[in-house]
Length: 150
Length: 86
Image 1 (cartoon, helix red, strand yellow):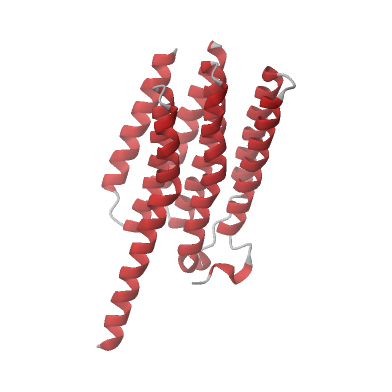
Image 2 (tube, rainbow over the protein chains, first blue to last red):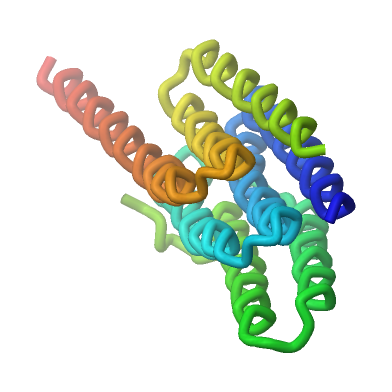
């Protein structure tokens, strides 16, 4: 049980600390990417916390964050489309690294849970998290053409 | 061990709130505010209040940035319209 708490603390401390630093400094394109990655990092952290406290119902927090985090990033991608079109952010490496981290955390939790309905829920959250993160990242880098003009 | 995670979450929220106050540009402030909402939800979870964390996530990660960005856009458009009238 203690290992899960340590893993969650390290992940949240380092991940959110880095995201905070990224969102506080640098040009706008870096800040937007850091905001996207902060939700992608916090979601596996919350899942690890639910395992650490032994309360499966805490998984709902991760589910809500996996759903709403990309929505928040899409808000920025839509409303900052003009600024971002001049200076498009590209953070493919970081995005895939964070997606891999989330996948690793979800797989570790699945192994710990064992085959059950809870594991299916974890897998759904992981799929939502990674697909939403990649989608939001692509929208930020202007991957959807002129859809964001407004 | 649980105390360590509480301390980490408290430090993170203190840093995030300081950055949010220190940022001057409203657009960048909205970005910092959205990260702060997520950190606050983590703090509530660590303090064993996941119900508060859920509502904080719903409001902080999507709704507050949306309202702020819409307000900024409206103000900017109005400013541009006035410049054109001159």
